[in-house]
Amino acid sequence: MPQLLPLRTITVLALMIVAGCSSHKPDEANDNSLNTTHRAGEPDLIPVIAALHDQMYAWEGTPYQWGGTELSGVDCSGFVWRTLKDRFNLPMKRVTTSQLIHMGKRIQPDRLQPGDLVFFRINRQMHVGFYDTDRHFLHASASRGVMRSSLDNVYWKSVFLEARRLPNERGAQISFNYEADDKNVLAKN
Image (cartoon, rainbow, N blue to C red):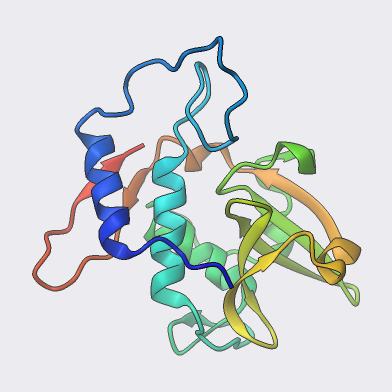
């Protein structure tokens, strides 16, 4: 499994963003960049990626528990809800996968950006996770708990249903985990 960014690296990236390091416009003539770079008119996705990796760092390996929303056990929609609530500070009541699939707007799989929701149909049930980067997504797996998986895996390709973008995620106040001696800092996306 690819290594997620270390917590200190995420913190430095977030502080650089707050300091305005990403406020310049990129060279539009060189448009062969990755989908995670900031282009004119598109949101800067570095804070979204950092928030997702921070959440993954905190929750990785948490066992699956149907209806769960705690570090002691969580289901897929509980993990998405907690991430939206804890990392993106979106005030919302607990939602199910059936409710999440009606939120935001549907997007094509080739237009996925970090933070987009990805949905799967598994034995007439729905499953949800967050698109991360490099064709991977973060989710609470029923068999292995909270983890990062590849959308290119034969199994996940066969059960992929759709992807959706929640507009309120971009522009949200992003929260990060810090060690006890660090201060709780928010980065404005």
